[in-house]
Length: 309
Ligand SMILES: C[S@@+](CC[C@H](N)C(=O)[O-])C[C@H]1O[C@@H](n2cnc3c(N)ncnc32)[C@H](O)[C@@H]1O
Image (tube, rainbow, N blue to C red; front, side, top):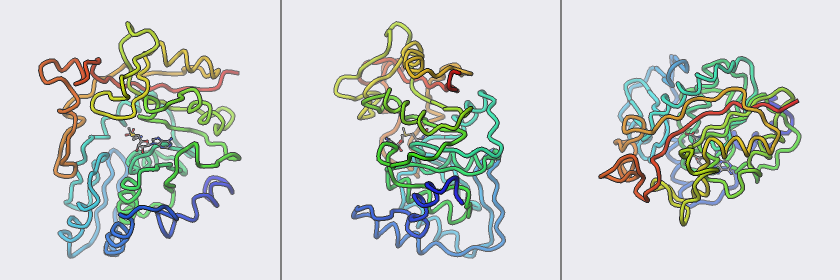
């Protein structure tokens, strides 16, 4: 059984078709790309400190051409033999910051909300997690996960193309719930935290990673028209104080936290695998302490939360 009876049923439908009954004119093309990926032999998977797969294959060029068609690759990197999927974000940097929380993932059941293409889920399994359910409504990410897991072949990760609030999950309690890069996109951050909390096992932990604005903004910044650092749909960038106010309202205590770290051009940049606008268009070119909209540049921080007794 995958995590619980409820999750087994909810996620099982996506094992044969990662997009389920979703409607999108790109799906036929993605399925045809995924079906062309060759069966591989002598597979050696490494999910510790990286996501890499070595295997026997005659035609690596064909694999590279197929996988490039799934761009933009925002999260990674992934290594398939000598193909280096050099994504826009070097997501290993966020995972190194996560490790500062010193949280043991061994044998844990995990919900990763807004998982992107599953880069972190692979790293969670590499760090000993038992099973990871990923929720990710963006179908490009879902196609990328299916392509990477074709090579990794993990049965410990499933991805479902749904938003948390539409998932209908009610009767499952996860040991750990991750929400990384989501809080500032929420119209109702309290409701988001409440939904995460409602799926947490007794003694479980919530991991929030978010952008933090400087202390002088009291509870936070509300970007005009939802644009912040070139990102649309940013409703609220909390200060540390603002985050802690939110957690307090939900009776969640901060067990550990990391120091805010400014995003830089090593962590986020344009690459061959994400050739569109990137971090350079997020900042004011004359003053990189500001976003192009004139707000403080993004700094990101982790919180490890538990329920107060
Ligand atoms: C900024 S990205 C962060 C991706 C990844 N968690 C990371 O930290 O790199 C936010 C992701 O959450 C997804 N997302 C947004 N709202 C969501 C929701 N309500 N439920 C689940 N996923 C959501 C988006 O599609 C997007 O891939």
